[in-house]
Length: 420
Image (cartoon, rainbow, N blue to C red; front, side, top):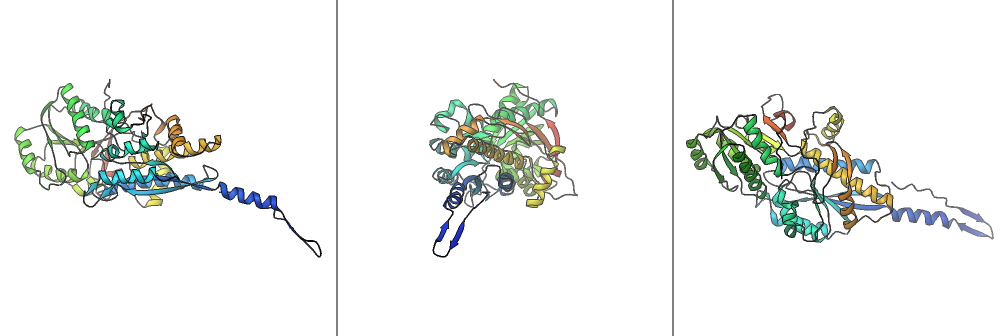
């Protein structure tokens, strides 16, 4: 907030007229001119199958900028969140064309300085080239497909060369393989059937899981693709049942995942079931319901810190502000906002302009202490810290079915994989 210290001198004298303190007036005008708004996008699938999980992520990001404004973290500037929906009723989840439209809208906004999002890697693949052309930084709190930041695909996803797609989570290069390690070392799985939902995230995650599963000696009995628009997966599940696998692994999100969860309970109730962070969502819990959700395993691509004493105050503030419990990706979204605020503050302190290019450069250099620990990025935009956490759904009837904090039981950090 600008301090208005006006020394407006008004002297009135008969026969002498009056004199206005112009120096004071000009000071007010200068202060008012310095009061600027920085637009920050928040692009998530708020329509469709993943809307509830996306809303928690949105709330985490919004909270970061609300708190920054309340504390005047960047003197002379106020953050304005521009929430854009990457989902459409037609797609029933994230929509690639809508995600691209939202990216173009942000790049064309002269007041926009960065974005939090997207949630899904399919959206990320559509948005990243557009952000690259505009030197516009985005920080995803949950998109984990490694291709987007892999230098091998730089020509496709960052044609101008510099990183624009940053993450406050690690990638499926670690998440998929480390769940395979968990299946082998902790669950003693000997055979598995792999499924994906045909999306960029689901295909990438399941392929990486499958590759590592074979490497560590788990027999992969098959790999099928589920169409998220279809209602019935019983034909595939019946085929799987006849093969008698120890486990299935699902790479995908809620639109296909909810139906799979329900139908797998009916067809293969005793088979171990698990997936990636697409399973770790209130949408899966509420859509799949109990007892169908009971026992499913899931990973997230970040440390689990919700239960830590240092985060209790934040959890209480979040719950009071939004009337719901946060999940770990609400934290990674909040931390993405913290990084953006810190970058803007550093630019303001140095007297540099705050725009697309300067924010991209500053975010690349950031080393910020956040709720999940220190966040810093490599030259491709990937977070240096790489932690994968494992959970199991265990129904607690004392809490609502969609309460991630109480229905997902934290097991621990997944067994690490050496990635070349």
